[in-house]
Image (cartoon, rainbow, N blue to C red; front, side, top):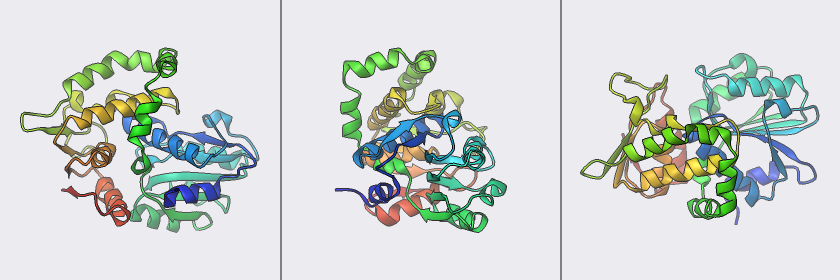
Length: 288
């Protein structure tokens, strides 16, 4: 049976034509979003091709991956939306996103654009600055991740062969394995993963080597996204409890039924996303 979000995705997808899916580029959290999204697209039998900005063409239906990219720190999704406008796509769906900036681009979006916002402040911002687009609330897509299905899909030799053909995966593999070996729960079972980037509240206290999610990432969806996501799941599953300001560390920990203590990022992303998630997912709890 479809989840409510899957039903909404199914109703948007045109089964008579192929949509272009462009994953949000970024760190290991973005890999988890991409993995969960591809699982959803497969569940609703969506005819999609994975691609990049360069593949956007006139008359297409384009699905842009969810994430936290439509904020002043980053420009990737801004570029994708502008390309959809300039190349006159038929329709565009921006999956569950944090929206806190790029008002000039939002103002250009018309009735062809649907924006899913993963928190209420993002919904209010998008509705104000993109009045012609359809703006809807939708929880972060990592909450749709099926961990069992992910483990099964990465278990075979085909997956391993595909990884060995991925140059980007291989270039970062040694660094990734070192981080996975280093980042472990302390003596009382508490795993601490704190970000070390522009969204950190206290860079003085953060330790770059212990920010797991920055040690690998994606430019587009592929087997590496699934492997990175599974590696993060296994790292978190070793813990009894988790303390983090990484949104997708906290969400994956909750999927694994780990107690979570949230530390806020620089603009209130974690609390806002969790507030919306708990409206439809009340059994999951986090402290701050």
